[in-house]
Image (tube, rainbow, N blue to C red; front, side, top):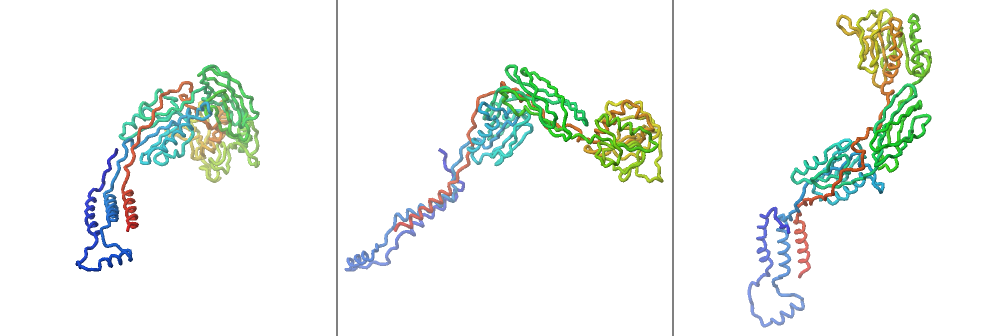
Length: 538
């Protein structure tokens, strides 16, 4: 039995008003006594008038005293102490990928855990401070009302981002704190020994696409994809890989036998559509309890216009046209004159001058003076000074030049002043200084490639690396628009084997502390009831 306490006992001194109320309730005494022989007539007159002689009203005084006592007690702030227990609750809800596994009823462990959490939080006293931690692909945190309402909980994904036993032990160490762990036990060597525990296991066979590798021949439609699949089952199982999306024609599904825990690679030779889009790879395996890791998505970029425009100076020679034909053959297109009004994939310019803003148009220029916005926009009366570069070198770490051999490159004459600002990939060492001979201008979405010499002033067209440099320049001008986009993150391997997850007996939550109850409102109510009853008593 919890004893009632008073927060302001000094107000009990106000009970001294009770004797004053008793004295005020006494009937007034007659001022004088007088003997009369008409007592009988006087009593009959009082009875006719329905009056009683003045006397002390005991019941009315008791009700008044009860009202006054209740008011004094309310002023003393009576409190009933709350029940002892935990004042804070830390909930750790496993949000890793394996929580999406389905049980025999077709319901995921994630949904069962949320339903249990909602039901139990509804019974937690309002005064308890609740914090919700959801470790998964990242660590999400909710506090207070948002934690009780389970706001903005995303689908389970990724590996478990925390060590559950360590989190439970650290939370229990805080005074007045209870911890409740809800998990499927997957990906953990052991489960917490501290605090409450609820395990929602959904054991069973699981097949997954664990990796996808590609050999992209963009800007050609050909695409080769290698799909790595794994099955975690008790015995060898038959599965099927399906391909859908921006592919024409769609290949037939591929049947594959998967051994338990052994990675199998399935290759696909595909041809994408010109508009690009999404490529979807799906693994179909009977009895799979975790469908979330059975699908992989790739974003395929659209194919560029299969035309190469060429423009060269009259005395530049046939090198630009030959280079355009070589590039067109590489990308499966054709060569068209510049300025035909047709959409082109790349503009090749050898020598001369062109109104071109660097990085605003997909182009590759050789010794060309640029117009408005270019660094080489001199007038015809101001000819740039040429130089014979020596000590040529290139940026081997850039994708544009990685693996290329330009050691045999010779340049007879170059005009570095024609180059716009940009990323330098080719340069010359002159008198201890680096003089740029090739730059990339623009962004990762749109770029142009510029060299400071004409093709006829070098042996670049004769090098074996030249066709590869052209193709890489074509791809670099498209930047991110030429790359595949991985729209599916690799599944965490620790979340895939659902045959034998860690298990432990469920443990209930401890009792929670309840707030002290304020009894002053009940005392005020008792005072009002006593005064109301007193008004009815005569």
